[in-house]
Length: 390
Image (cartoon, rainbow, N blue to C red; front, side, top):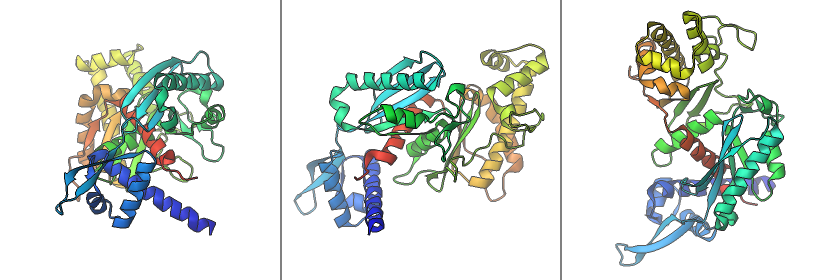
């Protein structure tokens, strides 16, 4: 009996998500339109819309005349009643905390300095930013649905600890658990930054209720990936679905921290790119200086850029064959050279594309990284907590 009740609650929750997701992107819609677009019965839509009004998610407007002469109820998202808290890690010394509306508009945003290295100081800074957001919009407190945090690493399922973190002092730490223990009143969830970006991009581009299959590649201090496949975020059995860091397609055979050679992250991370450039020129370089050298058509810089663009093209062609996405996005610091890299990505992809597909792969730059990351945190909270039933 408990299982039947649990399944019924999950079905009801998913149906509410369908309704809210549609209204968020279309606004001011009738029950008939919701029925048609969600494939839910008239009774289900009527019952769940009434519940969502009672729970404070929706408002009712009756200005439109129906064909029968009666006022048709139109549903819209209720303003300033439900909110999200989102945490974005800027680097090992700073993070950003934002209060967002239910429609994912940033209402308040605060950068907070992490006073010292260590997970407890990190949690202190998260709490400081959350407190500032709550104080800035005190009327929001009762309507905050939860806290979403973009994690600089992968949350290992069994021990719930962060692994492969770009911030050393957070490695092997149960970050979400520690934050939840010290944060009373709000539920906490989180995911790898690249997964969050893939989710945010797919929701931004989706058609009605279907998430567009999307792959997000993050080329920065590390190499990250987020995959939306069959309309769902790919996590895998151990929360490591789609991880590509140790794919052996590097061309220089550089030794990786895993003990093997040729792992793609050793050559496609910003550090790997700069190391190859410094070995070629005999001098160290910053990323900004390398970008400037590329734009000035420096021969060594352009040689490295072409090499990395072709490796990216090879990687994208592999991922395309495995997941068959609608589009790819490239983000991180590498997006600074997107127009230059895309030439070589496309050349390599065209050498390898399947005959049953278009030779033009849709690869786009992701410039609005910070804003999308916050919106993705809100999406996590919505999926996890917004419609949970006790």
